[in-house]
Image 1 (cartoon, rainbow, N blue to C red):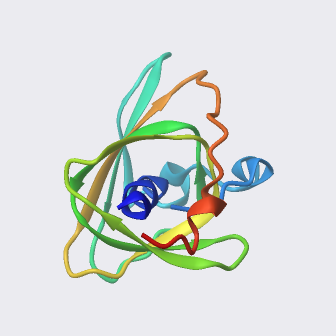
Image 2 (cartoon, rainbow, N blue to C red):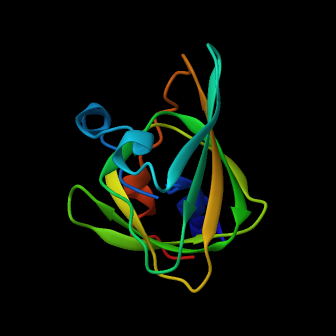
Length: 140
C-alpha cells in the first residue's frame, strides 16, 4: 500500500527519482507537452495545472516544482527517469498528495483509460526534500 500511495504521487505526473540539479535541466511540463498539460489558474501564489494523458500516449521530458496533486481519473502510468529507470505508477482516484520537486522524466499511459491529475504548484514553497529514488523497486 505504501508503494502505491507514494508512487502515485510521484508522477504525476507526473513517480520519479528526484535529483535537484535535474529540475532546472528539464523544461516545464506545460512547455514540453502543451497537449497534455494546461494551466487552469496562475497568480502570484499558485499555478494550477491539469494533466491529462490518454491510453498509449507519452509526454515529453520535463520536471516539476514542489506541488500538491489530486487524481481525478485513475489509471496506470509508466515513468521513465533521466537515469533510464522505468517503473509503473498506479494512480488511484481521489488521491491527494504533497510532493517535492521532481527531476527530469517522462510518463506514458500504459493503461486502458485516460488519466487526469490536477497539480497545484505553490510558488515560493520550499522543496520538501523528497527523494523518489526510495520508491523505485520498493515492494508493498
